[in-house]
Image (cartoon, rainbow, N blue to C red; front, side, top):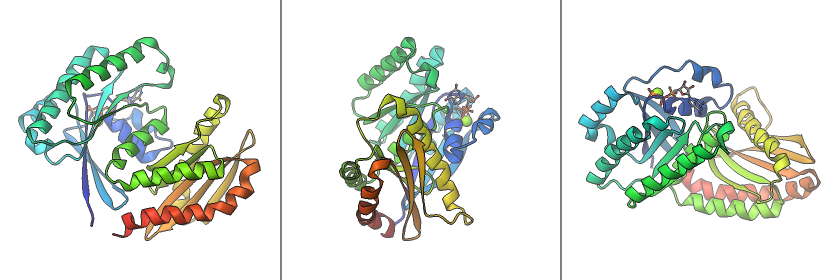
Length: 310
Ligand SMILES: Nc1nc2c(ncn2[C@@H]2O[C@H](COP(=O)(O)OP(=O)(O)OP(=O)(O)O)[C@@H](O)[C@H]2O)c(=O)[nH]1
Ligand SMILES: [Mg+2]
């Protein structure tokens, strides 16, 4: 059975909603597209597919004149929402209150219709340079606490994102979509098991759009390799795009990362869908890894097949 998932992305004008979607679409080389973005007029729709679920993102232009329209015609805009992604510009202190009252309008509508859907609230424009700026961290904590206190009835996941950190964007959307099936829990347990078997640093499964379906990281990633580590995951996003292209023959790819680490990307077909496994291991473990890898693929297939072929 095919499902249609409606994801509403809301937040004030300039919060960065369209930028988030653009970054997710392109994954690479998107900065110049984002610079030329113009304010969204009313609602723009972006459709994508996640497993067998068609997902439609409603990118709700955030200017005041549009917010008034949504408030007037709430039921038209917000009915049938499966997931709300609410974006708060963490650099826009002056408008935190305005942002919270917009959130309140939407949540009151959900409550009226007993829509107990998952919410993701992201503190966006949390750029790499702001990660340890005390005032910004405190602002985020205050906002989080206010929201939790006011809406105990909702399950809310808080995130921090920046378009200068593409992994944060990929994770944002991935966490959102993975709430829709308990299979994801099984998959996560499987990854935890194999992370140990392979003795690897990270184990990630992406779908064909580069959306993370499941991921597991070693708890001992040394700070000095962290940057290269993120870089190599970014490279995998780029490489998986190329593997999707007709002209790129290889199904898998080992790359040396320096520091005695290898990154490995492997394409896996289930039914008519492609998935990608990204692994980072130590060079010395390569042979042992390759011996066990086919078992891993079999186990992954076992879990994903029913999702794909139903
Ligand atoms: N510093 C920083 N700027 C960002 C980030 N994301 C988006 N921006 C900038 O914020 C501005 C507004 O981005 P948009 O994506 O158009 O904002 P929007 O929420 O879609 O706005 P509306 O369509 O009017 O509702 C642009 O100039 C982006 O370049 C970020 O993570 N960090
Ligand atoms: Mg926009």
